[in-house]
Length: 66
Image 1 (cartoon, rainbow, N blue to C red):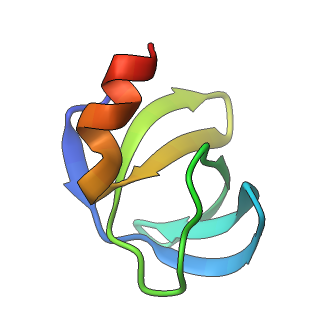
Image 2 (cartoon, one colour; image 1 turned 180 degrees about the horizontal axis):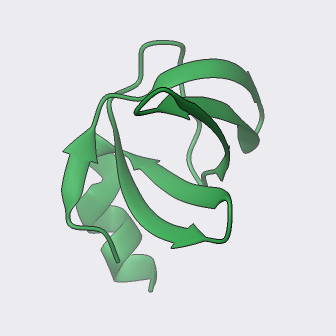
């Protein structure tokens, strides 16, 4: 698990998956929570070239789901 929050630039998002820009690179990402265009998210997992992200305000809720 990654233990830091980052403001990722959401490039394309539909329902629970999309593309985000992180450190100048485009990553595939998924989230169990809805995300808006200016969402502040926390990366919680990285698997290969995909990131799992949750909104900053939902991090504790996500941890309880684990």
